[in-house]
Length: 329
Length: 283
Image 1: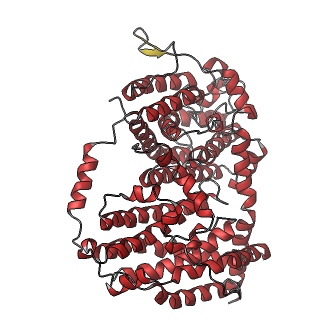
Image 2 (image 1 turned 135 degrees about the vertical axis):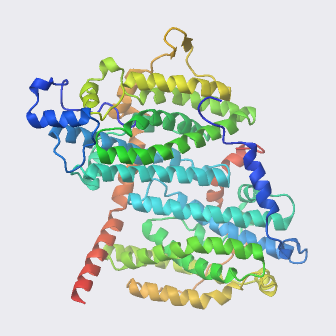
Image 3 (image 1 turned 120 degrees about the vertical axis):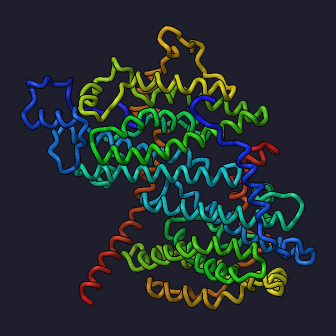
């Protein structure tokens, strides 16, 4: 999930009798699965929460370019290089659609960027982990994009029209991304012993951070109820995490890799895998800025933005001059 | 297997075999007499697109705006695609069983045949944009001529690449004009970039024995014959961009015969790391 712990500004869901007539009509539309469009009336808190969620999602896409971009120049073959470049380019494209969706709610891309750079807005905790080897390109595609898909597929039915439509396109590309990650893992595990060891190491490092992507356990997730009532969150964190584990474990078995969890076991009764929770103290530390790469990731974004200022200003100045010249002609 | 299908199917290999069998017949590819020169020339083509693609991909995730980030990686992708074709053909012509990947990842700097311009570091977006324009303008002229090559294989690759490069040159021209005639700062940065890069442009037009053999066989034009059209376009664009062609007429040369700048060694140590560290592994 690329949006974690999104604040809804409310402490719980209010009953129907506590809603104003406008709010009740709004909620009725959502309950009837009618999409909310940018020009429709919406509660201020719905707008604000969506800006937070879509913004966080957009930021995650562009910060998410960095861990994989880290290996583009070192990709082992021309084909892998081209595939990885195309994949990371897709992530930038996702950022673009999502910033556009957020703009329909009345906030500009520049404003959102500034909030990212100032630390006021977050991006997914997962991108604060380093990519150390080529196998990490496999693990990130397989697990991180895999986890993102779990969350994003249901979001295609989310209540806000522009967000739902952006998700349709994003999901199509994400499933390719997951496949390219899995394809890298397949090559690694059928390769030399050193490659297989590299693949196992990548899984060891990315397993728990991937589980953290779904956010804290439901009992600690204070904003979930309101978001679910608004249908901007479609499933609980724990539901999605369980679904991810259930799908991923057989994929790991197929690769001949071991999930780094001694307590992982199939539970006949529940029809689910029982598994260990990630270290939630580590999760909180990463969100607070103390992950292994927080400083580098945000630093790289700020450097790109500040270093590109003269470039953006130059283009804007030319456009203005050209418009004046056209007007004078 | 569960829910994710395996992409490494036999189908892929089969499709590649079918495609190879349908390859256009080209007598130049097996001509023993021109083989050394043709191989050398194909490496010049493929190494140049490879190194520029590699340089551009360094920007991935670090562009000055999302649209630029996407455009830069797009150009890099096109160039890596051209590399696969040029070096793939180079391997066929050489006839010693080397693939495009082996040529790209297992040769050292003195065996690389790219022009010097493309190995100059990215610097700021001014240098990257100006380098791109100076190269695109050359690349466009060259590919256009290559579509009339007596080698059908070369002509096919050129026709495919030309579609993409027509867009590259349109885009880099537009950016040079806008940034040159933008703010005082963007103007100064573009002028500075031009001053840094100008002395590396001459290397693209150096013509030697390899080029003479290619020209005699009708495979490729001699690079010196492209300079006039290139210069005319470059001067026009720089003029519109309010930029001044540097007075310095000095020309750095040597890229096409393996005499490179110090930068190339670092590009290769980065690019070739995995193939060197894990010899013989498949990825």
